[in-house]
Length: 354
Ligand code: SF4
Ligand code: FES
Image 1 (tube, rainbow, N blue to C red):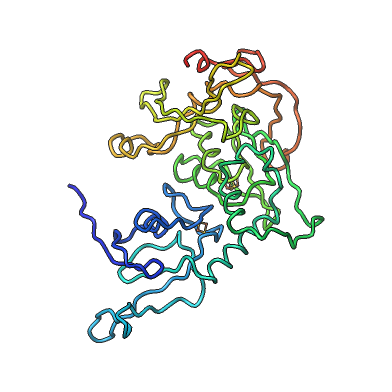
Image 2: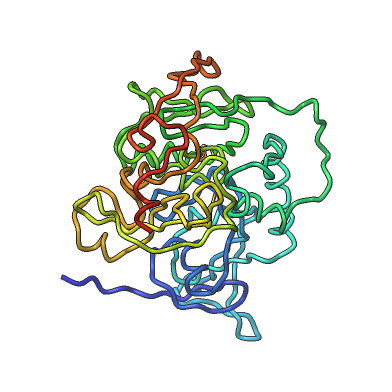
């Protein structure tokens, strides 16, 4: 039976907006008020956890008359709002009648500046070489809210492992992790295979995997797509291209029966004789597929086959880490996949397909 949506009136930056009742505040602000509340840990397909605090807003509720239960208004007719004394995370709020938020006040702007400054105390300046550079929310929000100067003592910086393979497909740069737990929650909630977790506490906190065999599970590639920074990257795209050089071509996964919607990131490539080749394969959102198919994947996750078929860079020698104690241990050997057929840098079938 079709569900009927109940709408409520909320106030976003003093503007009354009709939105579905019980919807996530970050989502409704974006879709009904064109107001992009910045987020890191929130993902619309997973339960909100309020970990990064990037989405802090001023939150209030319209006062009501105790006897009549009627909403109260000020003399000028505007709603009479009772504001929470402290900022609240927007990603953990769900819409209700009379809710009010301020997203542009000086208090909110100052909080966003502080959160960015805090996150950057443990984040390396890898942007010139990071695969996420150019499509990184942390980079974008640093441009919008970053202080421009640092109050942090460089010697206090935590140094963690780089280029750590969690399996054949996925690399981890521990220093870049901003501890949003998107990857951990994806494995728990979406895949039901909780093989990623946090180790240690505070600024020493690291992502580790208890996956045995290594983290090469069917859906593991999706963790690199939802990682808001370049902490998780795939072997096929690592150092292969910069995002602004790529053209996105919508396509379908030819390997799986579900025909997942994918996007092919293509580029003219010198090493391929100036031909256009696929440098990367990403999932493409299709909510219709989620409604009509009973797959565990939803409208945003891609299976691994097309990603593994993208040619990418040379399949570099890899180190494998199986747990916290072994992170950083190097076992140099080349793990050629079926794509390169033992030829480092060999081209897969996608290059011929275009
Ligand atoms: S590795 Fe990426 S997705 Fe996982 S917790 Fe760190 S920043 Fe978040
Ligand atoms: S996005 Fe709300 S706390 Fe992280």
